[in-house]
Image 1 (cartoon, helix red, strand yellow):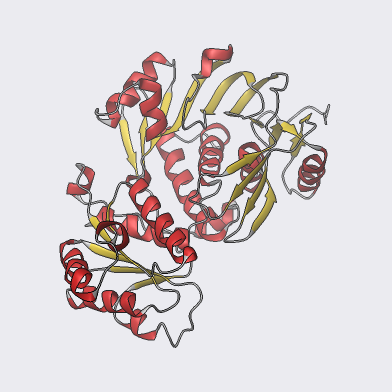
Image 2 (cartoon, rainbow, N blue to C red):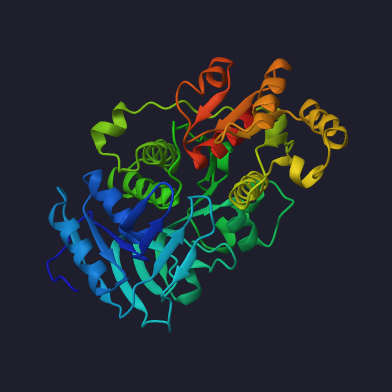
Length: 414
């Protein structure tokens, strides 16, 4: 679908994927994708925006209606796709199952003053702008911005640390060195590298600025990176703020998005004052704590969740001691002393509380008796059944992804 009306002078052209998204827990059925979400986030901040991308017939109807009800101009300039691309998740930390990607579609070309370009699955976009923000969104092979002929007078690269490592070919070097190399070899004016609980590093060619990550009560992970890019672009392009100021406001807005699953407006963002995540000196220097994973593993469902938690915690850089994996099954004489030694050696405990498994409850109590921090993910038990756990100083959450992030934030501060 094309629109012919001229955009406002400060409008941002957002180019990227418009995808169907489905998550089992928490339940989520929406059509956003990187470009659709970023355009909505900019519009919520009262920034004029154009949405460019490929979209199927149903998706086109949804984004058109969303634009109609937007209080800020949102022009829809999408190209028709015959199939819908869909992302399926069990939870927000899972690598999604992706459906509907067929043969590459014809390249999109966009020329505008301000542009946000995302990497896409079903095609490519060649863009030409004065100020451009580029997020390659590719965990295996992030493509350089200029590779397809795209141009920018001022280019800002927004990457996570893994993408920065892939694009520089370097792993065991300071992030500052990666940023400087990206600035030079990719002809960028600004490089923003996101570093998880350590926040983001912003390099503008002269100075390096550290921007903190901010804590949220819950964590809705899907699309949080899109939201960061949108707010960075809005502040840098439409509000005239410095890259460091723009990244800090984007970090705050991302915490708002993670906590509410909604887009911040100027008033709500101004009133939102989340605490910055504290990072200890030894964590910043590379030390990582050990977490004891407590939880029942006697049914397929229980084992699946233990595997998920172990994998997610390890992917966040933590060392995990799991009784199932590191001790195994056996009699009380075989396993109990080894399990308790694991708690003694661990820095804190991550516990799966649903089902009120007696062994898990004992492990929680044993850890608290040793004054070790405990994060408890417990979604389905009554307040009465959780009273002792909560009252003993554990961090208790009903949100699985939020529980994992609580563990990572705790680890960063130890």
